[in-house]
Each structure stands twice: as structure tokens, then as C-alpha cells.
Image (tube, rainbow, N blue to C red; front, side, top):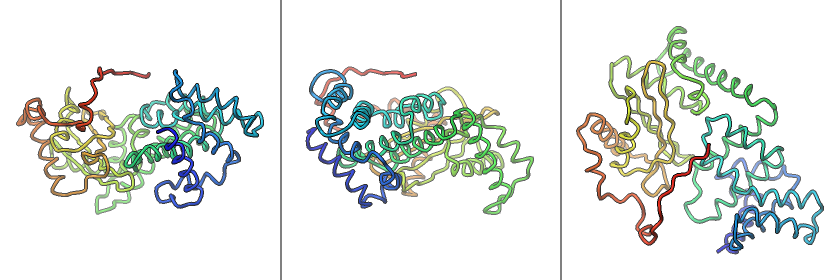
Length: 352
């Protein structure tokens, strides 16, 4: 119910402020004491869902209620405006982090236009974390936390510099330089020459450098080098990210229509859930696709070496045409049984 959820949100704010949730929410724990609008944050948490059940967009309805209630609760004009703004936009950060393309510069541009100030960004982050965590057990996970933190840091830096495009160029240059330094240093006995580094980094477009975490760049470079050196038509890499509660599966193969669909089907056959995907084609026509997966319940990373072997075998069989995906997937249950209670017409919404 809305009232129980609201109490849980406020309790989460209190626990973040106490520091008892620091392991799961390090950023929120750090920034909450820095807020100058702490009272407004708690009032917004109390009112953020007050518009539900009244018809229309509950965020807009709730914001109008907050505008009337603010003065009655002892808030001044500025405080009332802050509370109403938070109620109106309490879903914005999660929508941008989970539903928008983080590699698209317009995503950051649109978010900054809405938030406008570092204080509001901090307020929105803490409220979003407390709200998601209060929905129910298992709704919050490390993957969602990482998406929110990455978006927060990007928006914070963009507002500080005032130059979104300059910020993008700086990130690309830093990522390329960091990878070059690591490859030239030759960790694990794999030393690259300057010419090899230049050739490799030229394979990737700006989307790759902006859309992939820097710690993955080195793994990808070594995967590509292994495939090229050993003349492998397909190379697969697994990386367990315990903090984000997911496993990254990277597939390197010749790009062709339907490749991603086939890989996704192979993962479905393997009983894992895809939570995100980064799909790139290099300058020489190779696909470098990284899919973040969790177990079937979307609760934890997949970290079983034997299971890695089964997943890789399924990917190979599907790409080699040894498995008829449509037949193999027919009859498999991909949704929990409770969804059978509802009959909902499928809809696809494209927000561009």
C-alpha cells in the first residue's frame, strides 16, 4: 500500500543518514549530510506518492498538493518549491538511468535541463534510492545502483563544467589514454607496441569509449587480441561483477544480421536473464557485444564456472546453426506464473 511504502521510504532515508546502509549505498550515504535541504527531502518523501489514486499523473497531482501543503507545514516559498519539484520529478532519475540510452548525449542534456542545480541532483538521487529500495525485497540491486551512480556523476560533472560536448571529448581521450597506458605496461606478460595500441584503439567509435566502463576496455582488448592471434571465429569472455550483482558476457565475432538475437536466444536457453547490453561494431566489421546477465530470478550474478562452459557452448551451437532457437525456446517459461492472471495487450513505446 502507498502508506506502508511511504513509511519505508522515510525509514530508508533515516538509515542512509545513520550510515547503516553505506555498504549498499556509498554515494547516498556520503552526500546526504551535505544537503542544505534535508527537511525538504523528508517532506518530499512523505508526499511523493500522495497523488496516487486521484486520477491523472500521480507525480503532477502530488506536486500540486505539495504546493498547497508546504506553507501549512511551515515551509517558506523556496522550501515549498523544492518539495513540489521533488514530488513532480521523483521518477525522473530512475527513468533516465534505466530506460534512456546513456551513450546518447541528449540523455545527459535532457537530465541537466530538468535538474539545473547540484543540490537538486543530490536530493533526487537520495530520494530515488530510498524510493526504489522501499518497493520490496529484491527490487534494489547493485546493477541499478551502478547505473544511478554513473548517471549522477556524469550530470554532476556536466553541470560543473557547463560544456556537455567538451566533457564527452575529455572522457574519450581519458579512456583511450588509460587503456594505452595499461597495454603498453604489458600486464600478465601481454605487452603491446605503440603501433598495435594505435591500431586497436582506432577500431572503436566514440560510442564505445563513452558507453563501456574503463575497467572493461582492457578485458576487451585482450579478448580481441586472443581471437586475432589464434584466428578464432568466435571468442567469449565472462566477468563477474559482484558489486553490481551481474555477470558480463562479451561476445566477439564477425558482425551479421541477427547476431544479437541469436546470442540473446542462447542466453535464454542457458536460463539467465539479460539486464543490459552494449552492442558495438568495430571499424573492421567485427561485433563486440557485452551483455549483463543475472540468474533467472534477477537477484544475483552468475558465477559458476561449469555454467560458463554451458553458456559458451550454447552460444557456439546457436551461431553455428546447430540449434533451432524457435523450437528450443517454445514452451519455455520466461515470465513468472503470476503474469498469467493478467491479459495485457503488449505495447512498445519509443522515447527518442
